[in-house]
Image 1 (tube, rainbow, N blue to C red):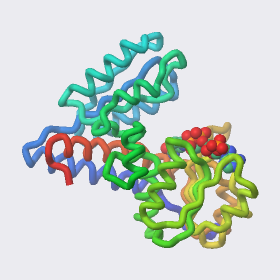
Image 2: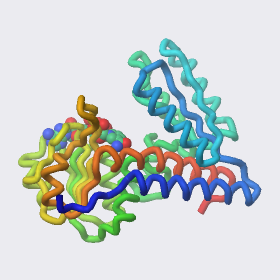
Image 3: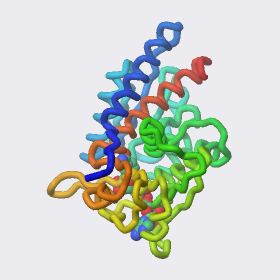
Image 4: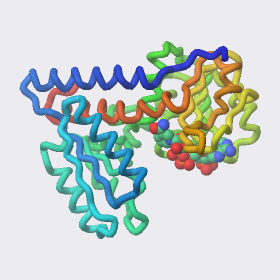
Length: 286
Ligand code: NAP
């Protein structure tokens, strides 16, 4: 293997340490500890694991865990009432509605009730609009985690050719906008892109978030490029990404592993967003 591994586990730990220090500074300045309200509806085992990790790391950085759990058969009105209650509660700095919600609920309508300033997942239409317009706001956690990985690895973005594979609201679109904000020349690929490998080979920075295991191979990577693999797939032999890591690592200059790349960054950025939200709400924003 020739590529340098970008260690997301280590960077995420540093981000969490910075957040913990920020919480202590906020308290020392007379502020109150940020509160994160994770909202879990139903008993999906994968969602339970994700929420448990978020709550554990929230407490570890000195924040208040204001978790709420609703039964899987809860009605839309009752779920909406909980979001409204959290929106009005000054102890709650951030609200995270764990998705997917049960199918009978309109999760878009629930998300829309989260005030932009408490939307620590950065997924509301209001925050997506602020990002699209290049105005300050809370950014989606996974793509902002990728930006931190690129910065900490010293990857030059200004004028670079960046290719993003995937155009989801959760990852691909905000990823492209964040790269554009940093003056990269950005191309977005999707399922209708003709000759994906040919487009990917242009990239100095390639971010793959397609949800297809091993979609990008060595023929889709320019020698020396930085490759960020957002994909997560659970196989019998462990976790895999959207990139054929072993083959691509022979061509790329830097690559994120799966696991231990982008994955740990998502929760770290959720905590960073929660601190940012708390500071803004307490009149102590940057
Ligand atoms: P998604 O909503 O399913 O979107 C996938 C995107 O990939 C779509 O825009 C789709 O294009 C595009 N695509 C599908 N097949 C393609 C192909 N053959 N060539 C090029 N583009 C193709 O997925 P997502 O939520 O963005 O997630 C993507 C992956 O990242 C998943 O594996 C997910 O598990 C992972 N993920 C990881 C984290 C983390 O914390 N590490 C967080 C979120 C997601 P169309 O728009 O044309 O359909």
